[in-house]
Length: 458
Image (cartoon, rainbow, N blue to C red; front, side, top):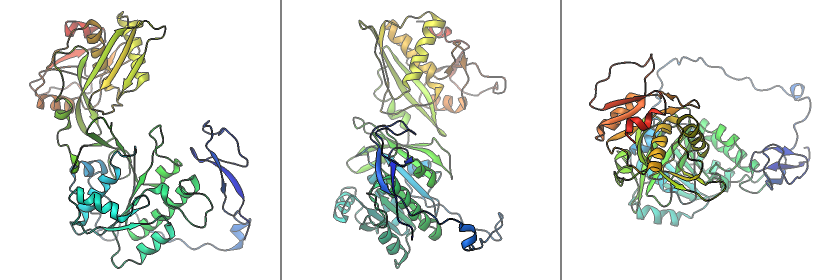
């Protein structure tokens, strides 16, 4: 057997080099390269040394009807994000900040499944079974027939699952960064260990039709720690987001082979655990001050769900050479573009002002349909005049100042009507979407962002 060689692996991107360096040439990160033991090299001439095993091919069309029933947790927001439930044999990865509620969410999900007769196993590399029981008692889940274990050796985990009297249908690994394989010299959490451990557990899940859910740590930038290949290995990647200063938590799907991406589920953190929010728009607007300048309501769309959120802007004269631009819940570069368009195309001077922008409720909005709402909030804050309380905004703004249509406008308007809004400032619909629409909400269409102040009477 060939002797294992030393290699140097970047813990941020997984790039391999033959010697140590302070900076990774692939991702340009500093102090991320560590020494790891590389696997023995494959002998040369493999194609002629031994014949491979013949692969069995099957037809795309099944010879008989196959049951692909999903495992439904009856937690509506969780099932929505996963595409209607857990697919047997799939692998899911959920990441989030420490203490955000990842373990609590998964414990509630497996307890709900086990109460419906689904065998579930919860393996923790960070907590003892007694600690998990304490959390289950606090959440009122202590009577759920879930099997618990504290282990970090992947070889032991695989053998125990294979030899179980009742093969589990759902397996929780909390967390993948604590797992290790004993024939690899690297420490747990390194690129080699995380990648190899995930591959072995996923291979077990696919061969035995077990749904496996990994908990993943995140970096300070909010990305799942470890190699990017980990996200390619799994079938579904979920991010659990939220601000600790708010009680709301957002479960967001960024990859899903069995359902829509960019779908979100909204939860409220309470003493009894995570409570699903049926109508998040109503809660996000519950504490809105209708007579405050710089406040605009935006009709966003997260996956298939319409969501009404409040955009808050504060514009104050600055004495600094470079005025401040602080943004929470939105893209800072997008704000800079909107400010430049308002100054260049509309003659609204904002260059000498500090600008603070916030999406209320701790939610993060990524779609460009927020442009019109942000522009309206900025104009309102600059003129210190409140916007009409019964008006909702959405639309994308181009660099020339034109206002462009966005997808699923009817869904956004329907949600606005349901919450009692009477008017909507929207882009002029294109030719393909220029249809008659039934509804009580009055539409004010925009062709150019300079028309915004006239429509609002500011």
